[in-house]
Image (cartoon, rainbow, N blue to C red; front, side, top):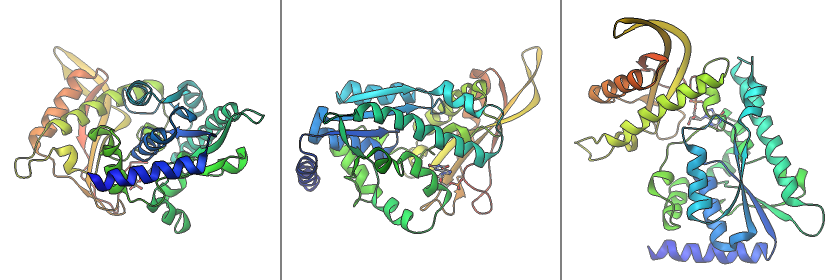
Amino acid sequence: DWIMGDYIAEAVAHIRAQVGDEEVILGLSGGVDSSVAAALIHRAIGDQLTCVFVDHGLLRLNEGAMVMEMFAGRLHAKVVHVEAAEQFLGHLKGVTDPEQKRKIIGREFVEVFQAEAAKLKGDGNKGAKWLAQGTIYPDVVESGGTASKKATIKSHHNVGGLPETLGLKLLEPLRELFKDEVRELGVALGLPHDMVYRHPFPGPGLGVRILGEVKPEFAELLKRADHIFIEELRKTVDEATGKTWYDLTSQAFTVFLPVKSVGVMGDGRTYDYVVALRAVQTSDFMTADWAELPYALLKKVSSRIINEVRGINRVTYDVSSKPPATIEWE
Ligand code: XMP
């Protein structure tokens, strides 16, 4: 609409005035905020922006390809795709403690990003002078107030401390916007509705959705199972509201449980892993109710996962609310 059009024109002019002809680096995570920030800054300064997308191997199925297709393919933005899965998984080997896992992923992320940023910064008058971040208004408030688990870790994606370390100036064009405004802006900038209205995804990604040690083969199974769950949620429309179950839930995902249980398949006995489906409804993520998904939907998801993902033979549904449970399992 025209109000958003005006807003974009103003924001673009502001970014151009701030940045001039200097170069900007932005860490793209695949999430809503960094995506919208990238699209807006790209609209303003085109090739003066370089996005850095660090793939830690714990993203959702096809996420890397989707981010590249969207930003490099459709928007024609400059994107450096850093394939760091081996490095991350290497450092996570043998580590089972949830907070330790978060720390390792956060630390590696900063390290990888920093190395890429240093390359782009160069060492003369040429090279990037700005670091852009998708910080939104609630982040600004949150980091000044209570340090929740989310705020602490979000700081690794909004790479906290890096501007100073790298001697870069900070560009935060979404700093005054609320989440719903960021989404509207994203749509107005031409980002797909599905991308802009995605559920939140934690910085450590599947790292905290594989209980205990993160093994590459667990990550592969989880990605495929989770993809099926999300696909069915997006397909299934609730008759009463006309909305999909994806839109009716605030967050939904699959958790990998590293335990084996017995099953039967054809004539044979199986001894395979278990996944749990998690779907919640919440307005602030501080408290949350488990979602009363239709049985038919659960049935479909369960049968698809067990039939399509060899290595998983049992699917459970998490009926715990927050509190006392948390939304994530780690
Ligand atoms: P919990 O599990 O604490 O999750 O009920 C509340 C919200 O925060 C997200 N979350 C995280 N986000 N890094 C993030 O960026 C994290 O380490 C992290 N832990 C939880 C979670 O997905 C939910 O939206």
